[in-house]
Length: 329
Image 1 (cartoon, rainbow, N blue to C red):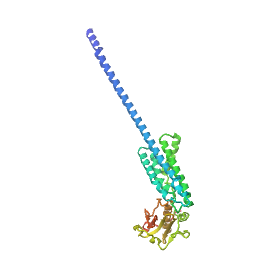
Image 2: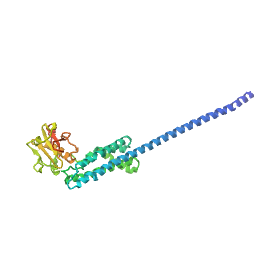
Image 3: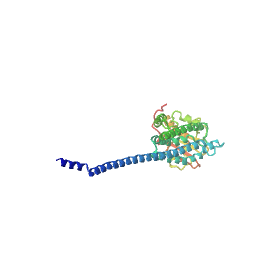
Image 4: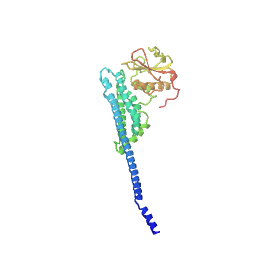
């Protein structure tokens, strides 16, 4: 019995058992090494992806910043500034043509940000783009209408545009971690306000729209001071030299702009006070934006041309007139 126990003990402690134990330990170590290598690879992959994304974001933000400031520089000191300093205001209308290529650069930069940008950049870039060209239009007077009121508006909205671009640049810096936590928190409050506020620009005015048209030196149909108003009983626009079929319908009002001449306007008699005020409000928005957009409610969506070179015609069909309602102060 004692001999059998000795044999069992010797077998259990023999060389084969040690080899098996060694193999098990080696296997566990190998698995651990593979796991560590896998974890290291995952962390390295994530780090590389983070570094790649940051490089891409930085390049996109730099392109966006350059495009936005190039537009601002053109607005402040480009062709429009030179034209407004000319004693005959030569080139004022043509200065607008410098903007579309710059706008394309801004659009391309914004689209890239929408793909790889951070949360703040994705919030700001579309907002800047949404309002940019409507605001820029407020800073570009038309030749023949480059009077002090237009210059004052230009100065005002140059400031508005610059402030919005600066706020956008801070959002890009925040996404890159270049602001302190306190600065980023204050910025987030401003960005939230930005997303909820109405788009900037002149508010639609009904009560004083006619008075403001006169302040903007919009003339009557014969380019005289509109001291007596813009109402006409003879439908003078029926004699406009245009081949547009859109003008061959009953119209309630017309606004025109010829190259180098002031704006002129006319509305037909017989309109209610509210209908007339709505048309004047549309006309005022068009004039303030230099005929380059501007929100209107009742005008035909597009202007048409006449046979006079460069003349543009905006018009209000009878069918577009609003329902009669009181004018609110």
